[in-house]
Length: 407
Image (cartoon, rainbow, N blue to C red; front, side, top):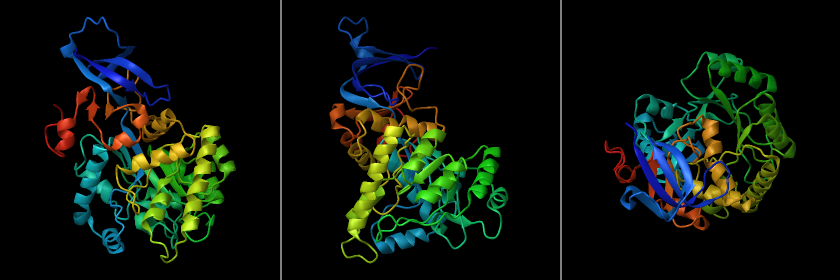
C-alpha cells in the first residue's frame, strides 16, 4: 500500500550545496521524497492533509565525523582524570547520554574516534545503541609505543603495524591511526615527527581494505599528514599546520578532512589565564591558522567533513556542531556550503545512505528549525522537530530510549 503525505516548507536547504529553496511542497511516498515543487495557491489538496512548516527551515540531519563518546567535555580536571580511567560499567551510561544529546541536536550520524578499552564498540555490540543514531566506530586506535595515543588506544609494540592490526581485527568501519602528537599550547606551529612511515601506513591501508575497513588518521604537521595522505588513508583528523601542499594533495586524492577547529576555541575559553603550559596567544594563533587552512581548502575543493572532537575539554556533544559551523562561516564558507559539510559530505564519509540530501529519490529525513535560514546555525540548538522517513519524531526526542518513536 502506498502511503503519501505532503509537507509545506518555508525554506529548504538540500545539503547537496544547491541554493536555498523558498516556499516549496514535499511530496513523500513510503518515506522517500517523490518531488519538491513550488507551493501554489490553487491546490487540490485538502489543507488538513498538508503538514504546515511554512514558518520553518528544513535541512538534512547533521553528521559529526569526529567525537569521543566516552568523554564528557568536563572542564574540572579531577572529573576528567576519573573519567579517563573509568571502566565500562561507569562509562556505559555516559555513552548513552551523549548519544541522546547528539540526537536531540539533530546529529543522526556520528563517528567515534576511539577509546583505550574499545568501550564504544562494546556498547554497540551489546545492542545498547540509540535506535535513530547511525554510529560508525573505530574501536581502539593504533599508536607508536611511547608516543601519544594511549588515551584512545594501544601500541603495536615491536610488531609491524599491519601485522599487529591483522592479529587484532575488530568489527569496526574505520581503523584509527595516530601519526603525530598533540598541538602545542605554548609554542606556535610546533610540529612533531610521524609515528609511522609511509610504507607502514600503506601496508595498514591495504590490510584494512581487505577487511572492508578504512583508515582515519590523527595527524598534525606537514610530514605526518603527507605520509598519511600518500599512503591512501581515507581521512585526516585535525590537520593543524599541515600546509597548503598537503591540502593540494588531499584535493587531488579526494581525501576527506575533519578540521575540528572549535577545539582550539574551547581551550581558549576554558583554560584559565596563567594556567601551566598554556599561552592564550598561541591558542588564538593556532585557531586562526586553522581557519586560514580551512579557507584554502574551500578554494581547492577539498572534501571537508565537519567533526567537532566532542568530549574534548569544553566541547559538548551535539551543541558543539553549531560552534563548529560558526567557525566555518568565519573561514568564508556560505550557509549552503556549511550545511553541505555538516550533512552530505559527512554522510558520504561514513557511508550513510539513509539521509544526507533532500532531493527527489532520497529519504525524507530532515531537521525542522523555526524561522528563516538567516537564523542558522543558531536555531539548530532549538530544533522544532526531527523527521525520519517522513514521520515526526518529536515524542521520541522528548522521551529518550522509549519504545514509542513517532507520533
